[in-house]
Length: 182
Image (cartoon, rainbow, N blue to C red; front, top):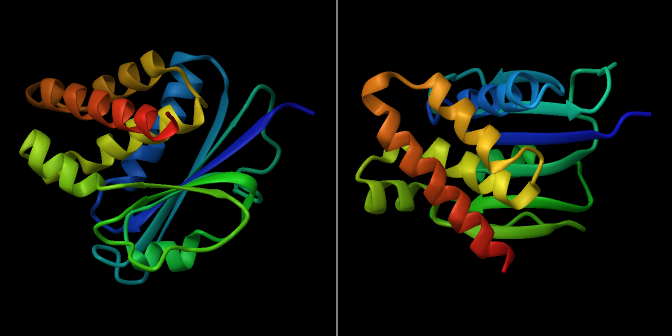
């Protein structure tokens, strides 16, 4: 059986977590030439309600495109943590945005805490790139794709006017993710 890695990005609709999932899938499939599947779901409220994006990355064909046993999960809001931080495998990873997730989900997984949205706002001046900061951190924590593949996929996805901002956001998230591991 091919090695399969499952990542779930969750937060509020409008935070760009569906985009983060698409970028990760493209980093794996297009840049690294691996197999990847991405799926998404929104709460009934769409913008503002809980949403999630799941990415399956594998060395071989993917027979089921939905996450079953999550290796790593990002939770950007309390609602998304409560709703989607379940099913993380034993020894898996949970990354929470501590400004919005106050009641930390419990389980047999490693929880990492980061002020993701505040980092984007205060260090980059733009809260809108919090999803790219989070993506960089998740790639650093999981190693599921290389740093370079993640950056290449981010830069291929953003408009020319925002390349520098997103490059900085990704690098910042990656460095903060690596610091969490230290």
